[in-house]
Length: 72
Image 1 (tube, one colour):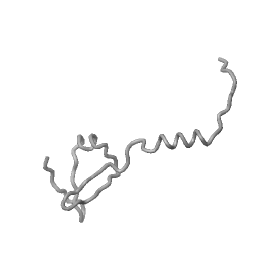
Image 2: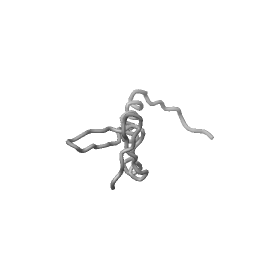
Image 3: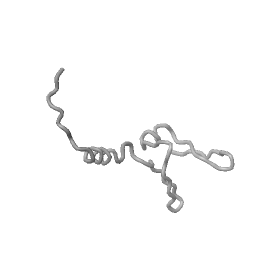
Image 4: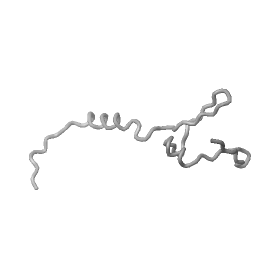
């Protein structure tokens, strides 16, 4: 796939097709690295990254209480 550089003020940018953005799960923040003459874009953070640990920490920090039988 070939794309063109677009002038943006004193800089340049590229337009990524929507299908590429959806496939790579890109959001507004990306991680960019340069290896030789290759630019690599990577999603900065995976969705829900760290949620499991946060939930476990929340559960373990509070004691469980028995509230008795449920009545409707």
